[in-house]
Image: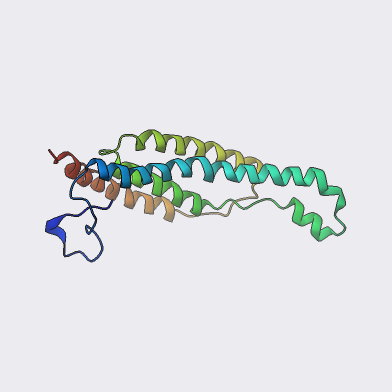
Length: 167
């Protein structure tokens, strides 16, 4: 989050940012970018899959009778793949960022709730109506999320301490 903490300058990459505290400049440069990224994730990644599915359905209705080979017909009627790992990773990233930054930026909570609402309904419609059968997954994704959830809480507390310690 572009933080410069003087006592932690030994880290190779972390804590070498431009801002010593959460000033107006920090909110305008860092937080505005993160909130815009969450809103773009909410409004694009879920609904875009449905738009592509609707366009392919319209393509099948308009041009389905013009296929000359069985291969072209099979390719036209093939359903899209639902990749759970990709969607789960996007969801984990948005939730991790919102939990970590919600103490300094409460606007991230409604943005995340919009993302989760749209992701749930768009993925549900895509999975039930437009996707082929998903691959079977084991418990590793859920176990990875359960590992990173406490890390997000620790980041939330650390970032909250840093934010609220400013006078």
